[in-house]
Length: 137
Image: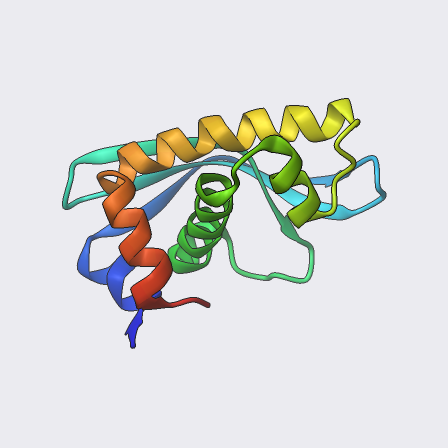
C-alpha cells in the first residue's frame, strides 16, 4: 500500500509556522500547543492556512517537522465530512449532540476547512484516492 509520508515527500508538501507554539487550555481542560500554520503544495503551487492548529503537549516536534501527520489529519477530517449525508450523521459519527450549537459551529468550520483542503490537493478525486489507496498514519 502507498504511504502518506511518501505522498507528502513526493508532492513537496511542507508546513511553515506562522505563529506559535502557544500553550493553551481549552474548555474541556485539554492542554495543548496552538499554532497558525501554512501548508504548501509545491506540485500544484497551492497553499492553505490553518489558524489554531492544535497538538498535545506530549508531541515534541512542531507541525513543520512532521507535515505527514498534519496532512493525514486533514484527509481524515475532509473524508469524514464529505461522506456524511447530513449534519446529524456527521455529529453522530463523531460523538456530538445534534442539538448542540457548538457541534454545529464545528461542522461549519470543518466544511470550510474541507473546501480549502480540496482546493489545496486538487479536488474530490484526489481526496478519494488519498483516503482509500494510501495507508493512514
